Length: 192
Image 1: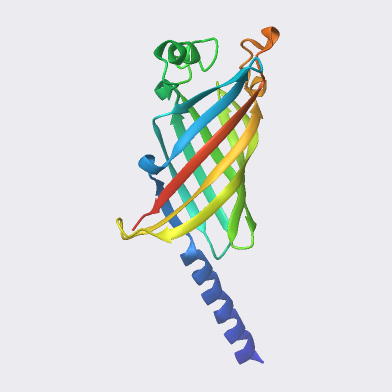
Image 2: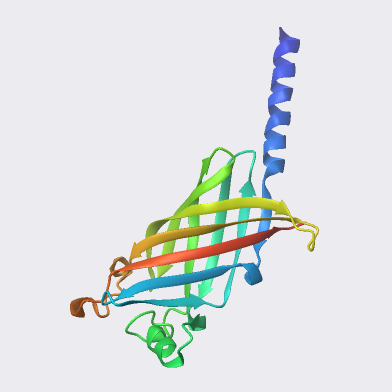
């Protein structure tokens, strides 16, 4: 019996070591990562913009169905295609880029459906305030990149947030929408 318990303990240690070995670190590929936002403009049109500068890391364990992500977006890199609108978005009325030059998403949980990531729960820090959001995965996949010769994992995620939760109240009294749709396409490259 002592040999059986020893063998069982050794197997458990080996399994634990294998499970930990499955976790890998990934770096955000900024050329394949895009964060855009959309907000209704008086029911007539939809204003859209993006953050051109972003960086971050991901820890991902496919076998253990877990992960961590931390992505920072440079608010000073807002790009709507209209410089005057970009300047207003960066002003104290909205993103207040002078005081809060970045916004950050830090995950707390990866939710799986089978072997695929279904959503990522976490916290968004914007204007110095942190609140929970869930990014729903519209698609997710890992593949061996023929160009990089490394594994790349990524997905297309979205969430709708109430911007007033972070204190971004500009224009609400005039009828500007509170809800903002975030769309995040992200790819991260496995690190050696």
